[in-house]
Structures are given as structure tokens and as C-alpha cells.
Length: 354
Image 1 (cartoon, one colour):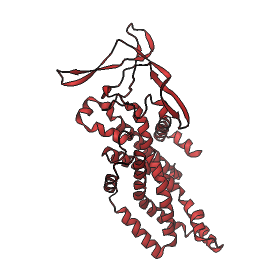
Image 2 (spheres, rainbow, N blue to C red):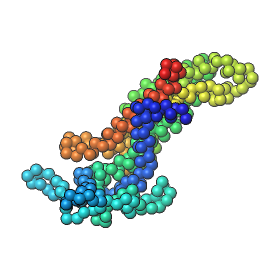
Image 3 (tube, one colour):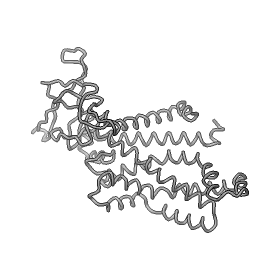
Image 4 (cartoon, rainbow, N blue to C red):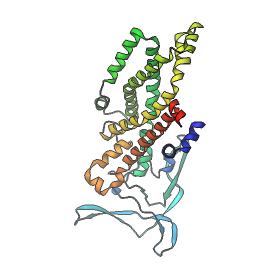
């Protein structure tokens, strides 16, 4: 594929593409990669720092990777809880270790994980949260929500926007006027505040899956209008082309002309718009979850995980809680870089200059 080859030749687009592929790969295999499930918790290990992994033993010799468990203590002088390593027992890190049972890719029952430690040991590569849950594992599971909300929203936004804009631009006249006034009224709604209001009035007893589905629908119902307006403008110019007039002469129906001959001409813009729209949906979901109006605990998303890091003491003493924010930044930046490259590639004027 020519586009993929071009991406591989551009260092920024290539880096963005690799980052996104890596993120989607790890969240796809989250059950296998994560040493713990999304709901595993050890409250004795609340706010435990990242586990230290050693490859050199106390005698200075190379060793199989191992770690130590933490012991939680209260330090009167500091008036806070501290964690110290229990050096009395080593816990060796084993590949493909047995752990909690799950279904691989949702189909195959198994208990094998990418890595784990001996019985009685715990490993937390990115520490734990306030409930003693493994941050690394929850990042993987939370990414499934944060990284898919954009694409699921697009499945609603783009069909509606394409058809609405196509009909408006094709028929013109009073139909076009009425349809565009309605779209403009929708665009005038302050989207983020509407999201907050709608999310706040959702029943408290809803599951995270139901809340997630409604967030997708809300995002889609807000985002279609701007896309439809641009498609309408493109259709206004395309419908005057000779091949469209020829189809009319041959007696083709209006719907056939719109679906088979006009809308396919907007493919380049659709691809660009899809790539550049995903980051806004990721940020919207993360923002809602950060405010406590999106995905609810104990289910994880990068937004509600980042909420815990808003406390000043956590930023100072528990920086591993900021990891979801770093991943949101990387994902949004990668989508924007990739979208910019695709836009330049599909722009005929840009290609002629290259």
C-alpha cells in the first residue's frame, strides 16, 4: 500500500504509527500482558511504589530477574506511611506464569500471563493506587475504553454526517436551507457542557458498559453536524460535474447518484477527518471520566485513573499515578501527527509539490 510506504519514510508519521500500533496491540492482549485483573486489589499495598527489579544479586553476580515484597510501615517522624523492601525473601520473575483465570481474546480460558512472580510475591511495575490495585494492569484495561471510544463514535458520526450533508447539498434550495439551519443549531450547543449535564443526570445505578455506550452516543450526536456541513459544501461542487449530469440523463435515481457517485468523491476528506477526529473523542471521554461523570470505579479508563493524580501530594510523592496522562498525551499527539501526514498526502496540491 502506497500510503503505508509513505508513512514509513516520514520519521514523525512513522513514529506516530508505531506508537499507535503498539498501544492497540497491548490493549488487545491486556488480559495476557497484565499480571493482575482489572479488579484485583490488595489494600495493604495502597499507594505502594513501583517494584524494583534486580538482575544482580547481593554478591554482585548476574541473576534471574527478581523482586522483593514491600512492607508497609508508619513513620512517626514523617507522620506518613512508608514502604520498605522485605529482603528476607526473593521472588523471581517468571515468563508465562500462572495467575488469575481469564479468557484469552474473550474466547480461550487460561491462567497464563506474560510474566509473574512466585507464589506469595507481588510485582507492581508502576506501583498501586489508593485501593492497592496494580496501576500497570489497569492502564492496559483502561486503554480499551479510552482508545476505542473515538472509533466507536465515528461509526455513528460519519454515516449520519455523510448522508445528511449529501442530501442537503444535492437537493439544495429550501431543503438545503432547512437542513443546514438545523445543523448550525446543533453546532451552536456548547458540547462539553452538554456532555457534563447529560452525564450528570444519568442514573447512578448504570453499569460502566451502559455508561460507556451512552457516552459514545452523546459524543456522536454532538459531532455529526460540523462534518455534515463540510460534506454539503463538497457535494454542492461535485453535483455539477459531467459524470453526475450524465447519470441523471440515463435516469439514475437521486439516491443512487448520491451513494454511488457523489459521496465516494469525498473519501479523501472522510479519511482525513476520521483520523483528526479521534483525539477529540479520546480527550472528551478522558475529561468526563476525570470529572467523575464518565466511566466509574472500579472499572478503569485513563481519565478516571488520572483523577487520582490531581492531589498535590500525589503529584509530589506518587508520580506513577500520572502515567495515564502521559499515555493520553502520546495517543492524541500520535493521532494528530498521523492525521496531518495523511491530510498532506491526500491533498492533490500537496502531492504535486512533493
